[in-house]
Image (cartoon, rainbow, N blue to C red; front, side, top):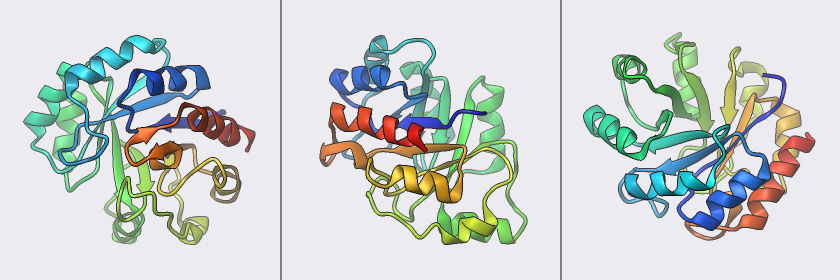
Length: 205
């Protein structure tokens, strides 16, 4: 992938979805994890997709939910990709792909380093490396990734914003970036101008 992959996550309003479409982002994320300030119903996510061109990848984001619930929700929402932020097994990822979904495996930086050192990571799933608390807006020290970044395509997340994304892309050279709280006016509420600025800054790197 020659161009940096940019995903905007936690979209819950039509204005924000339209901003993602206008910004030139590659993917949009809808959060279905209970208790998240960005949680949306699958029917709402399907409605928000009417603001998007077909070229934008639609991603449903889940965390430690039964795989049957994930599949049912993803189908209702009409998303193309499932992103899992939990302790899901390889077999569950295989089932998602067998059911026709693309997958993203999201890991905290700590879990990524632990699994890498143990030789337990597969290259089948796209990998997203996040802060210890996903969606919390906290950055992590990317220094360990300078020598231990995934060989295959991977996505950097965790504490990204329009001010720091270009520098981080240049230093750790991920295949993609993912932002949520870094483009919000308040917790859970996206700011269209920040979405557009984030994509522009990421692309500038």
